[in-house]
Amino acid sequence: MRLALTQLNATLGKVEKNLEKHLVYIEEARSEGAEVIMFPELSLTGYALQDLTPTVSHHASPDDPVFKPLLDASKDIDVIVGFVEEDTRNRFYIASAYLSSGKVAHVHRKVYLPTYGLFDEGRFFALGDEVRAFDTRFGRAGMLICEDFWHASTPYLLWLDGADLFFFLSASPGRGLTSDPQLENVRWVEHINRAYASLFTSYVFHSTRVGFEDGLSFAGGASVFDPNGDMIAVAPYYEERLMLVDADLNQLHRTRSRLPLLRDERTVLVQRELERVLTDQLRDNVR
Amino acid sequence: MKELSLTIDTDLARKVLTGFIKSEITRMGFSRALLGLSGGLDSALSCFLTAEALGPGNVLAIRMPYSGSSQASMDDAQKVIDATGVQSMTVEITEMVDPLFTRFPDMSPLRKGNIMARQRMIVLYDQSVAFNGLVIGTGNKTEILLGYSTVYGDAACAINPMGDLYKTQARQLARAMGVPREIIEKAPTADLWEGQTDESELGYTYAEVDRLLYRLIDQRYTPAECIEDGFSETFVHSVVERVRRNQFKRMMPPIAKLSNRTIGYDFLYLRDWGT
Image 1 (cartoon, rainbow over the protein chains, first blue to last red):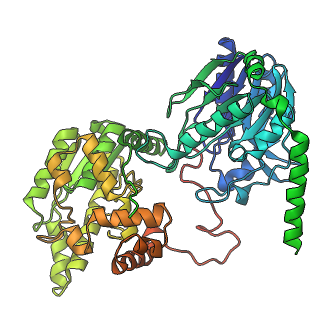
Image 2: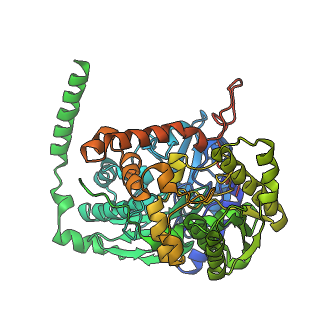
Image 3: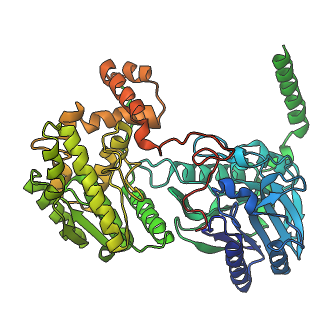
């Protein structure tokens, strides 16, 4: 599978301008033989939207003026984009859509909205309420958005739901300058993505952005980890870039032949113990 | 005492800060910037960063001495101009501020210091129109936290690349960027009167207070934990109180809320809105 990871810099609140950029990158990726192109979180809108949120929302459907050209562009290359979704009852979500063969294959709504430190997502957005894997022409996949994969439960759920390909989209403001050559949050995300690829013997594709929004900087460093937990590609930090990666999907077979963690995962035990833990917690809370 | 390091990766800081300057200046529709150059470390570092971000030809450094300012400060500022290759200008403020000093003969050094700082702001903001550039800030995290600056004076700027670096870290970055050694090593001073130094005025060294602030602010230690770790109780309490008392200098003036949507509370946009 040839994948294009776009490490783009979005214009804050200008969906039309960002859409144009998406279409240019999609065309470039297609001409390079990519079969999937992946954009970062909120790629169509920019990140720190605040009160711009209701003005940049869209529906992932053919009658939407932004999704129409994206769906048209997805006829022979799968496209993963980040956007603000408004539901029929006017709630706004941070969402990602997987477009394939001119159709919307799946939409994920961010289930963990960081509302602490520099983050204020819970103020502007509604919580997504589903974590579901879905089928693609390359195999079963799952999408998560930034804070979603700072929690171990969400990738784990996707894994149990059959995902072998994890598409992680993020727009994480850089923070934590120390004597290390990487910012703390960049180092952290690389650690956990390596861990997910290793623990789930799966592919982790991480697209993230570059650029600035006021004093917030986005470091880039989009990356791919293979089922052995090896980093097979990483984009340069702080540079807008389209990075092509060839992922050998047969590596799933080889790694899992050696390391049958999926085969041995005791889901019934997990279910039983989780039910016990949650029942106990509920009882303690009631008491 | 557990030692927490303020050491930074200077290549990374340099990359982020020059990227920030370039991005924020250009998206506001400018290509040029200017700053006041005192001869001290902070404005020297800010000048080096801005020159690297925009190219030295797009940067104007302005020296604004008062008759009482030291010649050594002027000479040090010149070294920065020479080392970076930025454009430069000298505008003496003596004849602008002396009439006000004469009008109120019993004026304290603090009032005079504030007037000089604000007069320099006026010169900078006036030149920003003439030069078609934006004013770059030179205040570091230590002085912003301690409120060791003049509101609408040296604190005034369009963007500040220095504000998340403690003085100790600014010194480290300055060394890495080639700021002349004598500027890095001399005693920091606002140069508002002869013999003034920041550290004698504050009552502690930057190295000491940075270690404390790094614990309190960045690492979220409680004041009690800092005292347990060996910082003197008086020192900890005076710094905590100073940070609290100066919160007003770090914020836009509060607006009294009347309507459903009030600037500052629920009218929320980044400055980079639409760019």
